[in-house]
Image 1 (cartoon, helix red, strand yellow):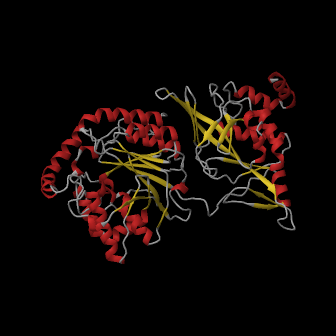
Image 2: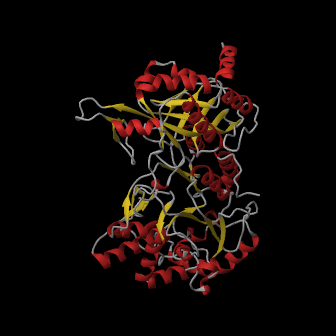
Length: 559
């Protein structure tokens, strides 16, 4: 049967036959049709762990011998190759279709008439089913092409996705294969009965560009393979988005000596003031500055799951990670001295103080994300996860609240900083807002941070002058801009799937394994807090193993 199919393909469509022939041998047919090589992938049905409208596809299957995970990435060679060939095959078979209006810019959309599902399935079977890199996903399940088109419910349902494997990784420790796949989203149109006096066609899902077309327009678009006009739409985020990291190498001996020298007097004074609370005084703790190369893996996660980022600014005290390559035009190293208004406040070891200065970064975009180096993108993200198209910030409150009446000066410095901000808001507006954010990327507005600095210049300067965390601090990004911004219509409450992983917990190994297997969080934070000295080495090894398994591919930012 296979021989018959291939012979028929050779004589009916020789150009496509040659594409298949060369593609399977890793030869570039032309610059637009480059084929990947993943010949060792086995086809198996898998269960999808996401909602029908969520295009951050993650599919998981467990077998007696292994686990298989499919995770969405942006379009690359495999997806572009498939999409170009699908267009050509459908044209050659005189099948009407149109393109454009994809749910986001990192996938393609392909529109067909639902009455052409049988023809489309024959095209998929004839030209693509021999390739083990392509799958069809619908109704929360993923199948090989042959399996999908053999199912009756495939023809009854509406829209579906074609997954194209771009990369794969086998994690030997957990015997898990992860297939990183781009998406071609297939949209089916149906004729509406008794809708109006005119014939009208409609799609069965939400789409920010199009929903219905009258028959003449629909038929013309399909016949001429029109790309639906999705340019310059107000629902799209068109502004650039940068990322800012703060980073320190706490293992650097020169930095340690400097920290010990400047902390001696400050710490002695602080200890006198915090004896009533065992949690206070962590401003000087080594755990706040410990380095496990989290930044390396965070950058890997960014390159894999946040393709919309323009520039990456890494703010340091003049240090540079040994593994970092500065050849990428995206990477910009920023010294504290480049952004601090008063250089007498340097060196600083106060992350809250640094927050008061980050918006001073030269060439920083108006909209940016602020990440600690222990924040990771754990699934595919788009700009809409963090901002609205009109520029308003999204923010992600946790269940925690900073109740100022229960916060005195003996509490930990960052908690007192939030009390200070609550009191500032109350004094200027007679309103209170106590929301504490999740440990997830912080969407920021540069102009609004400048506005807050100008309004509360005294408090900003005091915080910037504190070399270590202090009870006179503020947290302009992580707390102020959201609690103030919500009141002033600059920011709106939203949500993002996030997992906070506290490394001190006895259950941390099981938690890390759960995150790895389920892949249900868009962002994660691996927080270094409360680890006893006898568990540091064990925790370091566990953390590195997890990060290397979850983010196995070297990024373009590494040497």
